[in-house]
Image (cartoon, rainbow, N blue to C red; front, side):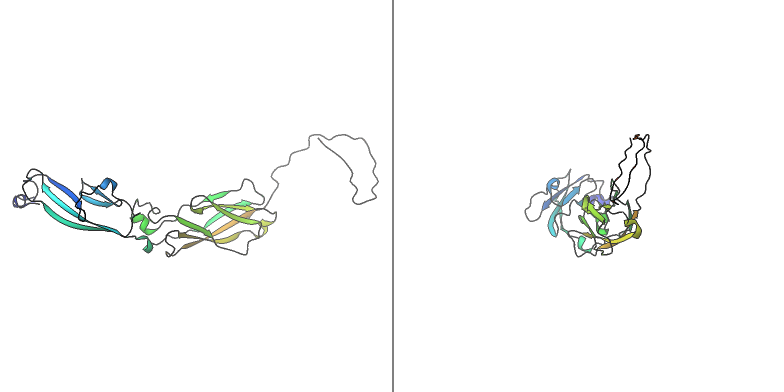
Length: 241
């Protein structure tokens, strides 16, 4: 505000519009916010906004020069502000990783799969585009070793961050010991010191079952034939259409 306008009440109305020029105190050059690596400026609300956290532990000191638009001879008011971009992700916390279930069948084809929603973290919900994921970067999903599973039962990973899980049973009889459980861990790829979260994956294998039989429509007639079996390995031929 200015003294004349302040004396009249509001502090702004009498002497009219203000302009704001923001320069880099180190170079004296105006800040090009359209191309600045980590800052943006909203002139309507006169606020500085962090546009990106890809440049971390960086800082800049800005000179803020305010002038009266209609009174250029009035000395500008200059103040300084220092902006530092600090990486908050090392102190973030991953959300709870919920247990999940998979179901497959013995020798089942096509093989079913399940894609999990990405586990969010605290700082990614507060910073950047606040989607719960982007700011602190990709997640890594890892199936922890479990020696109780038979080799014929497998879970594979694919897709974004390895969070699409596909289960397969390759042997008739895998259903006898079903369900199977295994631990799955999620961690932050770029922040290995952030404690991971663990969930239990439960795999149910359904028994192989006959669901339909194609009926025989007709038999080929061979007439009456007599066979004498002398060898247990002897085969008696017959055929049908």
